[in-house]
Structure formats: C-alpha cells, structure tokens
Amino acid sequence: MRALGGQGTAGAVLLACIAAAAGYGLLLPESAGRERIGQPYAPPGPGLPLGADDLGRSLLDQLLIGAAGSLGVGFIVAAIVTVLAAVIGGTAGIGPRWLSRLIMRSIDVMLILPELILFILAAAFLGQSFGVKVAILAVLMWPVPARVLRAGVLTAWSRGHLEVARAMGAPRWWLLLRHGSYLIGPLLIPVFVRAAMRAVLYDATLSFLGLGDPTTPSWGTTLYWVQVNGVFLSEAWLWWALPPGLAITLTVLSLALIGTAVEERLNPALKEVPA
Picture 1 (spheres, one colour):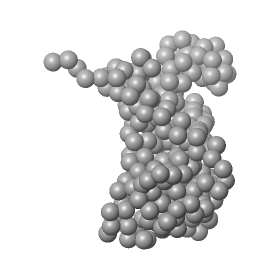
Picture 2 (spheres, rainbow, N blue to C red):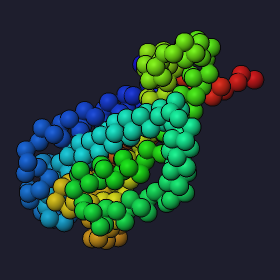
Picture 3 (spheres, rainbow, N blue to C red):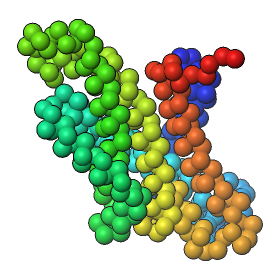
Picture 4 (spheres, rainbow, N blue to C red):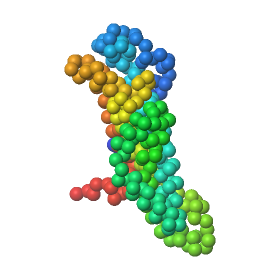
C-alpha cells in the first residue's frame, strides 16, 4: 500500500470499501431488491435507508447487489483481456515477422472501429446475459493492451543477455517466460486495472440504454428505470439516481487512481519533475 503512494493508497482503500459492499450484496437473499417491502417512491426512512423505487423495492439492496454485478463484470473482463493481450502481444513481439505483421494489422483495423457502438450493437443482437456481455467486452478491448505489451516484449527482447541466449539457440518462449517476465510482468497490472475500469463503464452504459438484463439489479439498470419513470422531475432522484451514479463514479475513480499510481511506479519518466 505504501509503495503505491498517496493517490494509489486512496484508490486501493476506496476500491476495498466498494468490494466489501459487493461482498455483502452477495450474501443477501435472492429476493432482496426484487420484492416489495415499502410504498412506491418511499423516501429514506426506517427499514429503507435509501428509499424505494416505483414498485416499493429497496434501493439499498439494489445498490449492493449491483456492486457485485458491476465489479464481477469488470474483474472477469479485465482478467480475460489481460491474458489475451499477453498472449497476442507476446506472439507479435517474438513470433515470425509475417505473423507479427498480421497481428499488428488486425489490431490497427480493430482500433479504428467505434468500440462502444460495436458493443451496443453486439449486445442488442446477441443477447443480454452475463456471459455474452463478458465475451463481447473481452473481444473488443484486447487490441490496445496487446500493443502495449508487444512494445514491452520488444524492449525486453533487446536486452543484451537475451540476445546472447537467442544466439546460443535458447527457445524464444522459454526466454520470454524465464528471463523477460520480470520486465513485462509489471505491465500487466495497469493493463488489468484500466480494462476493469472500462468494463465497469461500458456495462453501466449498456444497462442504462435498456440493453441489460432488466430482471437483475445493477447500477446501470437502476439508472435506466430512473430515466424511464421520469424521476429527475421529482426530489426522488436524490435517493434513487444519485447513489448508483456516485457508486459508478467512485469505482472508476478508485481504479484510475490505482492505475496511475502503478504506472508512475513502473515508469519514473511519468513522475513530475521537481521545479
């Protein structure tokens, strides 16, 4: 924690609090956030700390369950993207020249495509299940990290001891895993963090547009019903729209702080130069 610096520590503490709330949400009964326990549009009060929605369901339960769903999507997508980027970027860095060119041209094509629009279209046609969202996000998000990791592989590949080992006939993948991993491995941390941050945002955007699973409470779905019911025209937005919006903002902020701190730690050139 201390190695991350002030902003990194703040981001880690904030993310830990959100993760704890998500863990508590997983322990709630299946009916939580889905059954009526109060009057529609009830303001915060005893038994309803954040009030109720238009059907009298607890908004606090929906917020906690939504935390588990959003973080689950973010971390699973980030893990898949990191693995894909490592394998594809590593292959582009140490593979044959023709294969490297093919991979890089494919990445260039994917980078010019509108990522968010493709995600929305794919979700609209392929479905709204958890697995479909994860698969679509992973497929669309790996190109940028793959280019970053390829650059890291090429940098490590230019080290003198690796060049000598290659000249002596050592297998390329063994060299990369055994001797290059200490240079490339730390790059996986910011790749994972940034992928998680984008996945949380995209998942909330999809649900807000009505393309998420309406039967499963989530931060984006809550905001979707806020819009559909015209909640912003009344004071109910304070306890209905503000909490999930703030939760999304704080989650992205915590991941951004961690990612920035890790990158500054790994790359001294990013640190501010003293006056």
